[in-house]
Length: 238
Picture 1 (cartoon, rainbow, N blue to C red):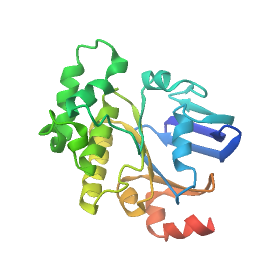
Picture 2 (cartoon, rainbow, N blue to C red):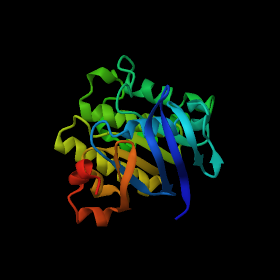
Picture 3 (cartoon, helix red, strand yellow):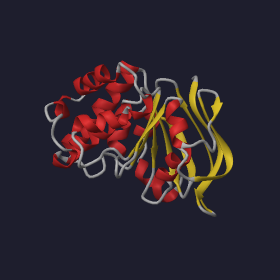
């Protein structure tokens, strides 16, 4: 496996508080990997640490072979890593199309932006027909699709997704997960997915790690995890 994102012995958190405790993990090129765990396990903090939004106390993060530890998010995006957070991931008072334009801001005057907007909207026909509506008028599932679409506007080689199915109906969650799989397969974008919805994550992930109290307690292929009661690991760590 060729690693596009490599996390090495990472200790991180907010201020002096260490939330992540010695995490090492690797995301392969063109792979979907899932980080599973209970509320408060540190899953979001791990993504924030990778993306330059949390304090790193020790350890390193590498992207495409370059150390990005301590870089600003804007610098990380320019290197091809994009992030769709769980909350505040769209601009509610902007239209769908305007949100996508904002997502491409880092690309400057790239003449292919307009074509890429059309391309992303073809991937998400559910929001294409609402392109001129404000994001606040969308359903929860449509908002999450817009958030992922906006992250794709940076033309990433890897994508961080934080709890994309949170609060969605089973149908909307299934639709969104199928889109994530399609992104991986048709665009060769590696995806690091943080999820509480174990069943949905196992449907599309190739590798899985369970994070409990800031530490990875188990890691393996998705097939291995389908044979165990994953949620039990959230409490026993074994």
